Amino acid sequence: MDSRARQPNLRADGGPLLAALRGQGSLPAPIWLMRQAGRYLPEYRALRKEAGSFLDLCLNPALAAEATLQPIRRFHLDAAIIFSDILLIPRALGQAVTVDDATGPRLQPFGEAFPTMTPPAEMDGDSLDPVYRALKLVKAKLPDGVGLIGFAGAPWTLACYMIEGGGSKDYAKARAFAYGNPDAFERLIGRLTTAVADHSIAQVAAGANVVQIFDSWAGVLPAPALRRWSVEPIRAIARRVKAAAGGVPVIVFPRGAGVLYRDYLDTADALSLDTAIPVDWAAAELQGKVAVQGNLDPAALVAGGETMRAEARRILGALGRGRFVFNLGHGVLPETPPEHVAELVELVRAWRP
Ligand code: CP3
Image (tube, rainbow, N blue to C red):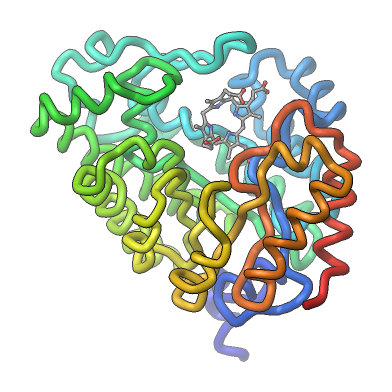
């Protein structure tokens, strides 16, 4: 028996995405898009209507599986990302979460949910079960060679939403809490580190063959705080996940980290680049040590046409010969015309140096 066949997560059944995360560069570069399932797709809007609220959709395995598969059917992308949300972890720790169409996520005030400012040590495992059931349904229907990505928010980004009670422009309240209550904050980050690792490992057990950790708000932290509350917890998570799950590849997205992207090099198999990272810098400083993913501006995908094509070629020109996964620098915007996505996929598949 082929030695790889005994380790399900090391089999080449993730196709081009797994090959890029593990190996050398190959052409065409694999492509998938953050937030590839969502409101820009009419079939998603229909499914949302059927499900009711956004969280109802996340928690309905059959409908979440369908939302995951919609962009794969339409665009033949190289990976599916499970349809879910990072806020299911705060919810599993006992904090009430709603996602309102107009105002975005709302979380129960931190002190009310956790009077000691510390969530419980254990998550309510049942509340995450729909995610694992959805992954199994997707796995059974996914075409050969298409990767299946499980994900979680990083502890810092989860703490931001948990403490603020929702989105914010700069997470000043979360930062002030962290600096002012270092012991309580350290306990919170510790709890979240365990929760994120557990949830990631369970997603791999349910069929994910890649895990992506989203630290969407890494960029609001000064360097020492970023190292302590973003880099270190992510390193601990990646180690635990890789040890428990057959070396499954981990992609880290430390959005806004700037030159501190270098600090994440030994935490990940791939770094997902935000739109601000210069691609030549990434080629010199990051690629080669790890694979890189990114970093087309989602607004260029909205604009389409020659702007989109020139931007995509500029990124491919700098990164396309090495270990590279084509993606956006952040999620697909709701106003994106689906036909621009189709054109982008075609361009990436046809591109040669
Ligand atoms: O990428 C995918 O297609 C998989 C699904 C996915 C969603 N959220 C679905 C979603 C993923 C990977 C996420 C991650 C996520 N969720 C992040 C990290 C990535 C990032 O964007 O920085 C964050 C910060 C969240 C929290 C969250 N969820 C916010 C701030 C919002 C409201 C903003 C918005 O875009 O509406 C959500 C809701 C959400 N999560 C939607 C989707 C498709 C929109 C809800 C809807 O109307 O159906």
